[in-house]
Length: 140
Image 1 (tube, helix red, strand yellow):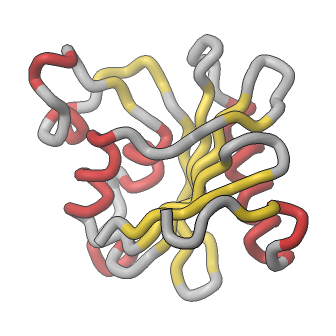
Image 2: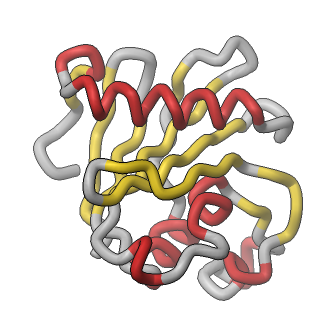
């Protein structure tokens, strides 16, 4: 955590928009009760977005603890796959987790995703804590 949890409705309209886009991506996921969406933002523009899937991820597997089994395609991995490093270097990522009613839940990137984001040069992750709060962490 950088400064501790912040209120989503008291942040800039741009951040609210990016969280909303990540929420919309999460609502597209059909991965059970754990549905995440992610939006990569650089220079004030959306670069990419993704949501979690049950597909295995060879790229993600490189960063996963071998004792944890196969890596599925998390939202963060989905959002950065196929992007050139020039698009991810110094970028921010917004991550949202929703329940079956599309209400926000805790969505801090897991260790595998943090390592993958660090590898591609993402600078910071902003993630929801609940329906009213978010937090951020420095990645690289």
